[in-house]
Length: 78
Image: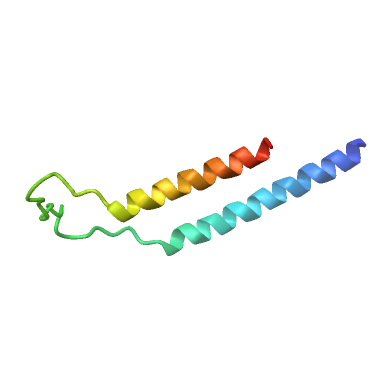
């Protein structure tokens, strides 16, 4: 790459960076700094017991997925 090509590329890069900076400043000016009154929202949901029942359908689906995966892997090595 010649010196003149390198200088032209550098100038073009600088111009693009300046345009990007101008556009970013325009975007930053569109946002407003606002505070929401009220402070914090306290948690109101309380679980009566911490133990949740097992999901039988979910367990069955997980087992079916595992069996299918093992069949696919074993077919690769036949």
